[in-house]
Amino acid sequence: MTDRDQISEAEHHEHIVQPGTYLAIILCLLFLTAATVGAAYVNLGRFNIVVALAIAVLKATLVVLFFMHAKFSPKRTKLVILAGIFWLAILLFMTLSDYVSRVDYRGIRYPMTQNVSAILPNRG
Amino acid sequence: MHRTGALYGQFNTLEQQKDTASLGMWIFLVTEVMFFGGIMLAYTINRHTYFHAFAMGSNTLSLKLGGFNTVVLLASSFTMAMGVWSAQTGKQKLLTLFLTLTIALGFVFFGVKYIEYAQKFHHHLVPGRNFDITYCINNPSKCEDMDAAELDIERKEIDEAQAADPDLNAHAQLYYSAYFGMTGLHALHMVIGAGLLFWLLRNAFAGIYTPVWNTPVDIVGLYWHFVDIVWIFLFPLLYLIDRHK
Image (cartoon, rainbow over all chains, first blue to last red; front, side, top):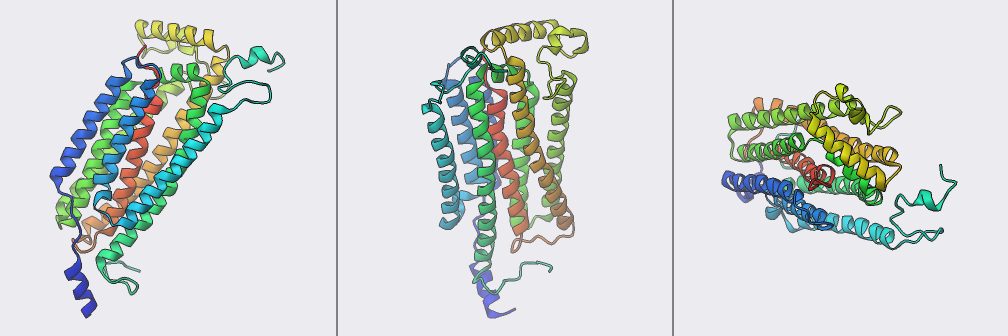
């Protein structure tokens, strides 16, 4: 063993997440799963999907922070995670903003729903 | 090269070495986020465009089986996290136990997925020339797993959806393509994860993971939790579109 190995052993102080934390997180996740199924049976109109995705984001956050130890990771790792989420936001936001504001060459507004066949008699 | 936790020349401490390994895994997981993100984006656009067909298709999925699988997968993430804790605290027997439990729960997930897929094949709900969204309501004797009340609900839903969307049969295939594509890719990730877990288990029985060096357990754990997160989004997206009818 070199001196450097001994130093590194002494400096090895990894944060260990305890079983109690894991147990609390899994119980939260199971509760949120029941909540998302329950919410799906309530008619919230267009907000059903918003509630479902909000709960999914909350669950994913719990998994990332505690099961994946992101809360106890170095800042560099946190930066990579946040950068990934930021790029995903660009992908989703810019593509969807294009889709919701698009009027195509036939003057049909997105969503090009089932009425397309009525407007274009030659289709199919 | 046999890696047993020696400190490599480019690192100052073992902690730094392990953080670097985690960072590399996170960068890979970010590319996976973009991969699944793009697929979910395409799904969202189609779901918005052909809402009636997607809602109809979603309601043919079994919420009991899907919900059960969600619980199974969350539980497997918990056992994986406990496996990481066992490795970090040097409890080698517990590590093999938790890895075995994680693999077992993974296989329960595959089993339920098999039941769900088989039912869709049975009901002619697999995209292709034999796809027929009205198969069960026209051939009730062939769909013996559905009772009269369920068939009545399905007939009513198909009639309503067809009134809004005359091309329902074509657009419903889009939903099932997305369903098989997304759950199939997710299952493929789980197969790879199960393979990695078997490899960890073999090494864990050999007793090579110690509190000083357990990087592979940690890294495979990150991957397994990521696959869990994908399912956390797939479940509401695919199963819970329009349940409140």
